Image (cartoon, rainbow, N blue to C red; front, side, top):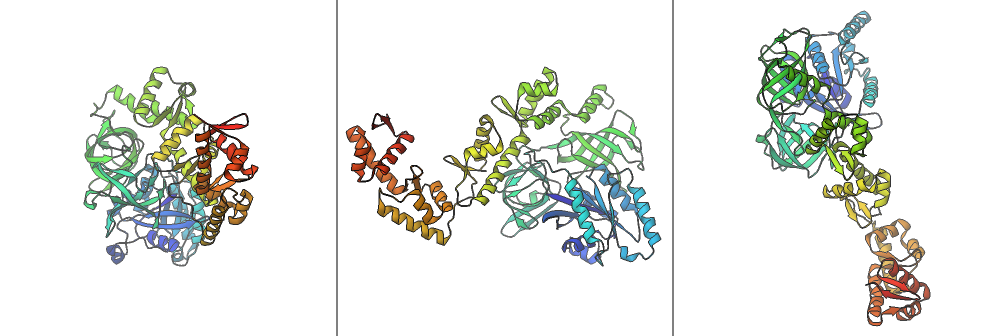
Length: 621
C-alpha cells in the first residue's frame, strides 16, 4: 500500500490537480469551498498501474496553515510537488521543499501545473531551469518534472505513469508487528461512534484488535476498518485507514494522538534528538521556545542545545527537547521544529531516545558520546538487523555472525527479549517482526488456499509447514500463537481461516442429499469411493470428507458418518462380548462381502482401535 502527499505554494493548483486525477474533491470544508483555498488536510485516492489503489493526502499551501500541512506530510511514500508554470518557485515552494528534505521523504515527482496559462516557451524553460536549481541537493533532486494542466487534461496520463513508476521503486513499508497510526482526523458517525483516520505504519490492524490511544493511555477495540471507503478485515502498513473504535469517546481523542497495539508506544515529555538547522535560519540558542511537529502531533517545547553554546545556520547538533505536554513517539521518528511567532521552519531531525529519563548537563562528555553512539545504532539494533537477515537462528550462531563481545551482546539480547522484540523458541531466535511476518504469511497462504479450493475445509497442516519452509520447533509454537490470535482454526490435521466455511450450491446440496440417502439405504454395502465421486463431483466429495460427513476407510470403501458409527459400533460390541473377531466372522456379522469386512478391520487397526493377532483382531487395551 502507498500514500502520496502533495506539497507546494498556495494557489498553485494542488487540490484542482488531485480532483482532475481522481475525480475526488479533497477540499471537504465549506470554508475551503467558499474561499477556494485548502485550509486543512484533504484525502483522495487514485488507481495506478494494474489496479493498485494509492492514497493521497492533500495539504494546504498557505503559510498560515503550514502547521496543518505538517500533520499530514510525515507518513507519505512519495511527494507530489506542485509548482505553477505561470509563477514558478515561490516562498512556500521553498519552505515545503525544506520540510520534505528534513523529513527525508522518499523522493517525489514535480507537477508543473497550469501550463495552459503559459504561451511563451522561453518562460516555461526558464521556470523549469529555476526549479531544477531549487531542487538540487534535496530529496527531490532527481524528481522528474511533468508539465500538466488540470483544466485541459494535458500531461495527466504521463503524470500517473511517472507516479506509479516511482512508487514501484519505493521500498515496501516494514511490517514489524508493532502497528501504530498517528491520528490526523477524528469524527463520529451516528450508529457507529468514534472514527479516527491516519496512515498505518509498522504493522497490521485487524477487526477486533485491542488498541491503546496514546499519550492518554485509553483502551479500546477496533470495531471497523476502511481503506478508501472500502470495508477491510485487515489494514496493511502504508495504507490510509479509517478506524471505527469502541470504548473510546470522540471528546477523548484528538489529532496528534496515536492509536497502537497495546505496549507498542508510550508517552514522553523529554526527547533526545539529532538535529539539522536550516541554512537560512538564525542561530538556535539554548532553551529557545519552539513548536515540535512529530507524526500528526504539534506541541510547544524548549530546545536544550547540547555540546555547543548554540547551533549555527546549516549546522548539525544534539538537542534535548523538553515538551509542554506529552507525545507518543518511537526512536527514529522524524520531526520538524518551527518558530512559534512569527511562524517559520527552523530545522528538523530524528529522535534518538524517546525516554532519556532526566535532563542532561549540556556539556558532559559521556552524554555527548552516548548521543553519538545512539546516532550510529544501539547494540540491540545491530543484533536485530543481523537477526532479521538470518532468522530463525541459534543464539550462539547469531552472536558469532554479529561479531559482538559477550557482555554487550548478552545485555542487548536480554533487553530485546524484555521489550518483546526478540522471541525465543527453544534453541531458535526470531525477531518480533519476523514472527509477525510469518503469522501474516500463514493468513495469506490460507486465504489463497480457500480461494483455490473453496470446497475444502482447510489446508493440510504439513502442507502449510512445507510452504513456510519452517522446522517443527518454530512451526508448532507459531501455529499455536496464530490460533490464539484468531488467525486460524485447527480442524484435526487441517488448518483454516476462522471465517472460512464450506458452502455448497443448491445443485451440489441436492446431489449430496441424494447420495446420503443412497448410502443409508445401502447400509454396509455402501457405494464405492469412485461411485460417490461420480455422484457429487470430486471437489464436493473432498469437502464432505473434510466435514466428517463421509468416512473413507481406504481408496475403495467409504461410509456416511451415521452408517460408519453404526457399523463400527457393531464390531466393537462383538469384540467386547467375544474377545476376538476375524474376517469371516465380520462378513457374517454384517452380512456383507469380504471386501467390506477386510476394509473395516484394516481401518480399525489403522486408527488403533484394534490390533491384529494372527488372523484375528482384538481390542486395544
